[in-house]
Image 1 (tube, rainbow, N blue to C red):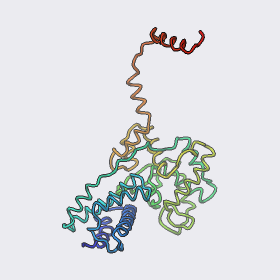
Image 2: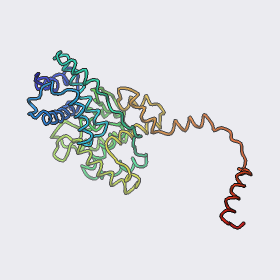
Image 3: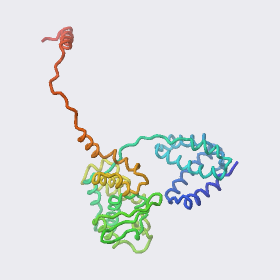
Image 4: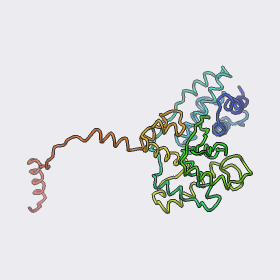
Length: 337
């Protein structure tokens, strides 16, 4: 039996950060997946997680684990696929270091991703977005911070991890304010900002505590804002905005919905999916094409360009045979003329 622990430790602590350049969020997500997998495997094999060997994690157990995620933990197919991707990545690492497990790894790689529904992306209209940006109270320190965070989340289309990870030195307060963003896969991009966004950020920096973490946005304890902290702030202000724009109340407003809103508004303004892809920091323009499905503008243009077929006008005339049948049926039931 080949011990799993040393290979798993090297994979998470050396291979992912040094060779793959994976972010801390990716490493944490992978580690959580392996914790769930080893807990499940230990229960199946009647042993402790630290005693699990590579051979214990065969394709049959992996399939059972994936079924458990959906049936026992109510994971969506998308979450299930993310766990499977983490397992595939681990066994690509193992197959080169433990050649004896090559056939086992091949069988695990053959486990397919599960097809899932692809609903249209949710986003806020311009009026709804305006109500949300106006919700924080600018007369308070927390209100200035929240207003700056909401502006950046929407105007720059940032992922929540990019937003809470921003440092002070990533904001360039020049004549044209801009933001240096280090995104997913360590891809860097420079984003110019609206003057209004630059103003609200400058107003927050003017009152931001000078002591504490180097991140741009801090919580009440002068520590870096967390993902859950921003999620709470967003829900709080969305409730306030719903009193101005009631339609917000019927939508699930999350940090990623602000990113979707930025993408949809940019697409509607430019009509260029390539520019949206560059703005959001997507690795492939194919990822950005999901916004085309949600935007009716191009479909309306295609419909207008094609033009409707010419239909012959006229009134429908009931055939005589049909009238005879109806008359016969009505007479059979003694209906008076």
